Image (cartoon, rainbow, N blue to C red):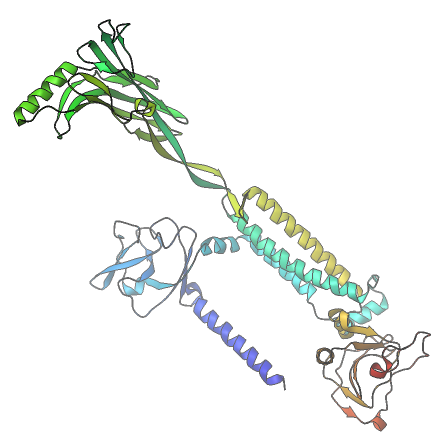
Length: 554
């Protein structure tokens, strides 16, 4: 009853395999599929270097299709998008390009239209083509074949019986079953580690990273002047931070010192000056004067510019402005603006620094003082210019939020691969310690359910099943054990269910292993027709186990 579903499953699997082969068969071998491993940035952001594009030939192509063609100008396969038609030829352009491709291929020159994109698939495909991966796959395939090999036939059993090969100590069934599982897992681990190691070997050992570098221009304003000695200015000096009474002060100057700092600065040069202007609250402004230009070169990273603060001229211009517009005078501001042009390199990358904020004084008919709310930060403005530095550094991989160097990852993968191969070889070698026939294979595979017995009494009805797996399914259905009796001429496996005994006989017992195993046809025997009783030996001193259900065990 299981034949039809099994045949249907096999047919579906074969059909699926044929469909996959038909879809993925490469163009170079007569198929209609082209594989393109992408390079460069022409198709970003959809495609990046190392992605894999799978394209299939189509009957027609239209504007908007991503297609591949062999470029005669570049002598390589190009995958770009159709953006226009030029008669019967296609106009092609990369999504990230601002120019058209030189080639205008006709339809018969197009290899195919994009069918599937696989991120990083090109890198994996390139790694799988390497000789190292092919060798690894070959070794693991051979090892897997050795692990899942079919039981030895008559020649192997006869050779083992003649002693032509050294006999290894026979291990217990549970231990051999566990070794079988370990061997299979080791084979899978070796395969995964081999492929992973090959991919790691194929990956470049370095990578390009971008890191920001800050170039800082730190400024410092100060002002000074002379004043009439008196109650207002006891020492006759105007200093930074003081209120300036314009009637008493003279020779006022403002200075600005600019210092450039940053990582690995080189070839720093530029010029600086101070511009002084006056502005009223209604939006009017006028230029007063500038300081001389000061060069920033010769390896110096600091320079100072000094300008005159002519408050008398500022007041005169303000009075003229208010007289012209016919309004009374109001508060105004005196603005000192640093004008800088600073260039250089930081960590090998060129930069052009920005200008700092100006210094503002409030100005009225009697005084000049720092603008309301002025703090030390106003007197020490700074600007930061960010420089993006690209460096070639050892490649690092991220695993569970932990970054490890690719060199360490390669060592770990190689160690895992070697350990898995050793475990695989050891498990396969130790796994040879059995008889190697159908009975032995069945016992190792289902060691947890096998119960060796010296003798048992079959029920009134004996049913011979077609194969040992069918007997195992019966045992699973009844949730019971499979009894095993190793006779001189045959191995008998049985499952007892009240009145019925399900049995499978493997010819070639302890004395005759050379005959190939032959499944016994299914038959049902009545109690009086049972003519081939199992050999019975004298009961052991131990008592039976669940005799009512299983019969008598010795």
